[in-house]
Image 1 (cartoon, rainbow, N blue to C red):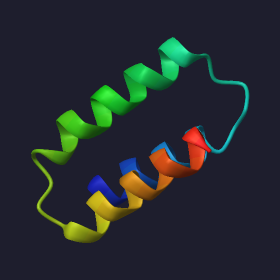
Image 2 (image 1 turned 90 degrees about the horizontal axis):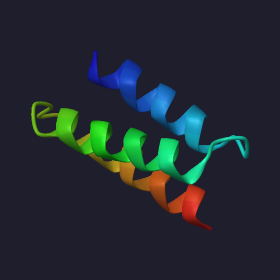
Image 3 (image 1 turned 135 degrees about the horizontal axis):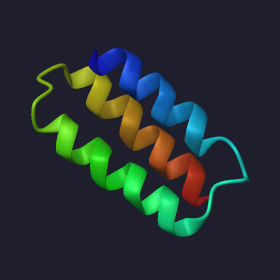
Image 4 (image 1 turned 30 degrees about the horizontal axis):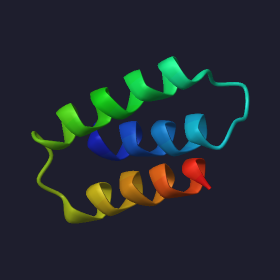
Length: 55
């Protein structure tokens, strides 16, 4: 579940057709779900996706 979410999150952030408000909602949902995910690699994947989107 967490891995699938992280992959979708990265895919969503790689598109340029996302509005800022929608992107913010995705980030909020991601970090909320990360509190329930214990796998470190998922946390790293989501943070890398966030950094790539902001650049």
